[in-house]
Image 1 (cartoon, rainbow, N blue to C red):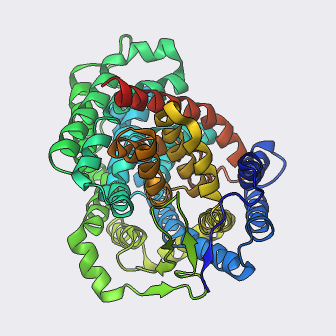
Image 2: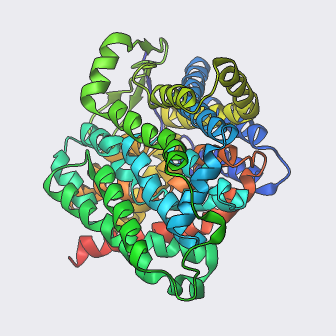
Length: 530
């Protein structure tokens, strides 16, 4: 028998909101305390979320457990699958000496760590966000920054801050396609609206990134290069999102940003910087090609794996959709979260062949063979990688389980409805609703699915554009990406900083809050001024 969600179990919205928030506060508090390892903090948060769902809200215990198991499975696949194979590829390049050559070749382009940071974390990371998403850009760029000499916490935090502006168009536009599906709004209108919100921040993020790393004074020294990287990303982002659609926004913008910055650095360098570091000269062309080959191959394969044509063909071969019986269409979302009662689907999409992680695994195998690895060596490297990230996989699974219990129990909607009472200030707080959704679920796509309908309903009640507020959910959500537990664990694992997740959270939290505030103010201006 279907179970209807309850959005005010105490008859007091304030009390209901505080109790719904308790599992998230517990999780983040334990992470930030430095006393509890990430995996146990995640398990504690999960236990609290199940207790709130069953005891307070009245969700049947069996449904809560099934939701947790579905979320845990999603944590392992596709997220854990991506992380495992990216780190496997990274390990092979290190063992074969190719990664050292890669570092030296980047230093040939620029020995300035500020510009290396922008080139890798912002421009190169945006390409992987556009092609694959789901943790791939953070895992790749954090590993690259560690190899270039960045400290683990620093590499993790900076990769998370950089992975913001591209997120709404990530994985070939998946978040906005999902948003269109739950709201019924025109996809091109949503794409255009987000394309009028995020380019401002695409220009800003390179400056913000370097200021966090090196301080304001050091940022002023490289401002021309930062402007080139940001503007050459923002302009294509605006044009493609407004006049084509959401699918290729990040990929094209990232390529333009990387190309423009690389060309600019051939004719410009910071004042007082050495023209070329003697330690990084005279790399043989063959070594250079061998070092970049695995990463170029990764770009090609991951991009191809993400295209609708390839994805549909692979899914036709191996796309078993697993219905979670006892949960599938047994939970009813209720008005005012949706216009009419709506049954929530619970289908686990085990698309193992078309998953981005499988494309990365194929890249690692081909790249390893081309670098001269023997099959036995690759097997040992894979086993070693799996052993090292075991605790991180547990953490990711527990955190995703918490997110799914939050979604199916309706505690996310309790929090969302609290934001909906903001009245005139709703465009500002509605943007923060998207931020909260990504912080809870780890995904802009999931946040759009959760809160897209609520944004449209509330926008009509408040008297602002539903397209604006649906887009604001996605644009605000991108700033929550750096504090979601899943991304923090991925970054910590990629930088060998397991157990330091609390330190990473403290590193990025104020930046996430500040940037989300700026997005909210920009949406307010769009709602009432422009």
